[in-house]
Image (cartoon, rainbow, N blue to C red):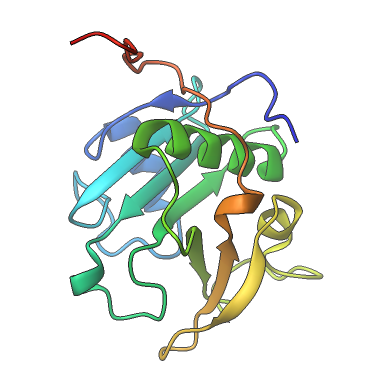
Length: 169
């Protein structure tokens, strides 16, 4: 499945435009704080109009307390744009593959608090449309959705990244 024309731009963990979107996400720890990303490796993506935000995190497996150590984690996704969420998700995963290379064995996971998301016919639908499957629950009751490496889209660079020069010493 093609990801289409890339809509994401690389941003950073303290971008105030992205922080404003993160402040409206249900899992925001401290609304108004300049940084909104968990410690460790991250890729922050923002649309040009700053109306959608994605954060890929790659925590070190030794510090993970859930059942998917080593997996990439979507720690924040907020879409206030007119773009289809499942398309943005596929593109964000493609950008993550570009940024970090081959996916880890456990692929990518995200965690959904079904008591905090808007009341819908079926929560997590946009992730499922993007290829994620229910993989279990955390000890705290969050539903885990997982995208296996073989189901990920091909790597695609987000806007604003420096491209690699292959074969250059």
